[in-house]
Figure: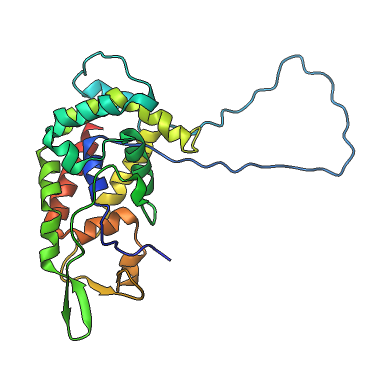
Length: 267
């Protein structure tokens, strides 16, 4: 069953998504052939057989973004396991020091970002891995007769995050992303994608968010148990990221999509 719109929305993950940029998930089909016929020995080969390269093609090489982004300071990268202090300083430079305690979680920063990006095109985003703190307060609803919908006032809960995302310079974000990309790629492979390419996955996540339908008119809700679900089955079946975009209100959605397009161009 698709995850219902939570009371603590993972929209915050979209904010960090505008910080930096992208990657890809590739799966393999392994084939095994068992023959019952007797094996006939072949003459020895004079050269070793040619083994096909099974690594997936890279669709969006990070080098393309690197050539377009302004050069970052040539500082050595920290080890992934001790990268939080460096990432905290980077976020403070991009968003202001005051945003660290209020907006961002300050531990496992790269892992939270990579995991969230990987899950946004899926049906749910685990809250334990969100890179940014949830929006305060419950989902605001309105009722008429027996119908429940998302209140027009609910969009205001997202506005501070969207404003923070709008204010960030896309080129500076991509430059920081390119600089720290080796750590993100390492974390992505540690998730279980040894041949995956994280930048491709981020592009996939951005494209999925941009494909979210516009939220025109009241969004009807159902509450079969504790949490709400979209009454429209087509909306409820969409990805976690798209349901976030829909829920934030049409004005916020349009602003965030504009920033995502800007970042995608830089990537």
